[in-house]
Length: 586
Image 1 (cartoon, rainbow, N blue to C red):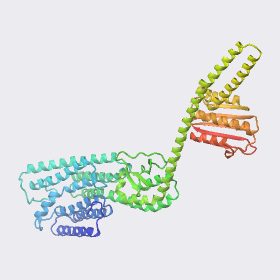
Image 2: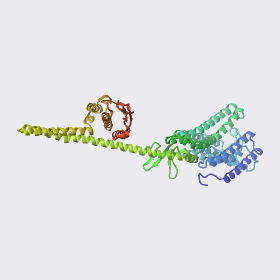
Image 3: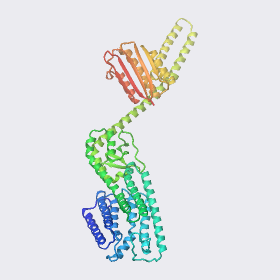
Image 4: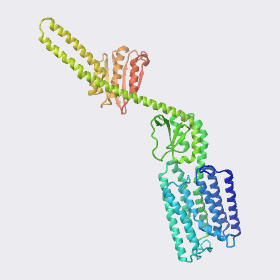
């Protein structure tokens, strides 16, 4: 069967029949040939049933995970080892074979338990250190079990629980047997420590969602270790068979069983509850904005770091329309939704084990994600248009400054030079008509210079470039045909494009007051606040100004919008006009 395919009912039933046969054989051998007490018989066989049933259920419910197969193997192994644990007599059929197999493979239960813990929840060991430790556990379990079996020595220290003779004793040395047993215990303690360190490393490196999943497993495992330590203390203090020792014996065994199975079933339960929430998600996503789709999916899937990205011709964008660089490491897994994909989910890699849930959530959110994609595309286009307009504004402003400089330093200087030459010529000319003609030429020349200066001022006044907004606006107010009261608070220079925008807005607004308001006074306020500039021009004129009423106000709106600002005009008929612009300023 290919990895990841769900097992058929027939295959599961076949395993069930075999396991039922093994459980029945355990009961028969334990009752007829075993010396173990009834509670021991029930506990040992129940553990095998529990592991086997859990393995079959996990295999069926989560076929992508190998945990179910490992759990099933542990159930089989418990049934194979149980005849020895139930202390069967030598009169039992197949005693030699049962004892050899059981003693040789008994400690493989610990190796499988370590594998399940280190590979949780996928059933696949994540790296080389984990594979090395688990391989060492299996090697020690098989080699150590066989070595202890062939050197088994019966004395007071080895008959604590059950005194049995090895049917295949090859090494007749009590000293060797005790040394081998001590070495085996020390190595197992070392491997247990290595497993614990790897589990801690897993927790530290895990994503938040995986860490929440591991928390229960660690808690159950810690409880099993604490109960085991309590059992050893009780055995030393009160002796074997005491009520405290027996209670802790069964408790630590079942705590170990629970630490391997309960966390996985808790994860399955959480997944099923998430499935139940998918229906509610459909109704919920019908009433959320595009930006909330991401948060809703993250909440449903239990991944606070989940992100939604949309493929466009220019690459990925997020729900706000901003470029989204694809992840360059394995910290985020990428799941496409649809073919071609409507969106990409960037999520915790642990969610890949719940592909069915991912597909269900994506199906429920598909319409909302399509809307979100369209919104993101529109936002991206708007951002590109704004950036383009900003670049055009900056380019136009730079060109205006160049043109103003060229007019001031070129044509204007040449005209001034001609004026000086005409003055010299007038002094040199005699007669009545010559000086008068020169005077007329000089007047025409001065008029041309004034017109050229006015043109240069309209492009970008030199005072704005050299001295900033405060001086430029004061000069603009002084030259206005109406009285202008000033409130200027811009202590530092700002971006040249913003300075030009403010100057243009104020100049156009004052011209509108002079032409249309029917008053001879206006108030101008320009204030620098954190991250923005506030501009207000107010008058008490006739009002009624409309953006759609002419090109002047429309030009102001476009100019302000080009730098990412906002413009508002309040102009009720007969109530004056208030123009307010807000420009972003770093």
